View 1: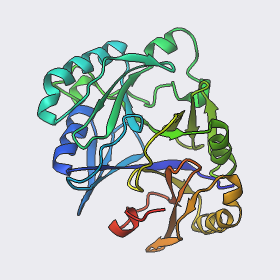
View 2 (view 1 turned 30 degrees about the vertical axis):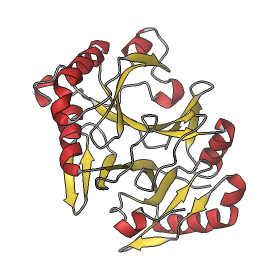
View 3 (view 1 turned 90 degrees about the horizontal axis):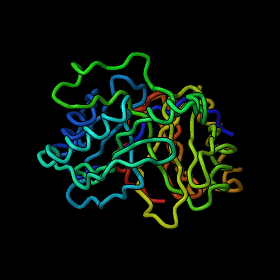
Length: 296
């Protein structure tokens, strides 16, 4: 079993960075921390993990809203205000499919598509926490993901303030089989929210991944992935060797070759449902274009 310390990155592919980045920075409070050829790394000021956005070009396929990412606000009224704001101002950012806010496994949320066709959620757990259900439940995913809330002045001109970049989402076909892989192979903490969904967490991370049961879904490219950091380079190398020997029995569907970026070892894999994961040490630099488009 791998022993990840934290979830350090997630990756998404858009059509054009020039269209997608304004939607993420101006509507969701992300800030650019690195800009290289064909990709940009973003970070929310209240969150430790990063979002790496890859430019795929006009032919990049449409994404499924069920594979989305989420930011969190403090008050339920902010979700309603965000919905109204996106409906009135979203067109200048290329925002599409702004859904009406709704409740789902404790959260009051709205969903929309940015112009690169990736789904996003603006969520709030105010109601769930006020009913005494406890912020410690389910690994603390309902708890605030920030020490100090960002003031409205940090995000002026909008009637809501994204306080943290909280989660991403995956689809699975067999919840029990996937949970076994996540715990016994990837070494993640798994919390079952209900019959349809579970939360995946690394020990040192507040952020999490929602894995939801689906009847069908389109498998994504490696540019849609989550990156786990192990404690040492030796652990990464040993983990790759162990997965090569034992991963198939736990549901591993693909194991990429062990690569190196300078002195940092890393590799890609897919879980039982074809979702991509990256294993590395610390916050590794992004994969080359060749590596990102490698198929299983």
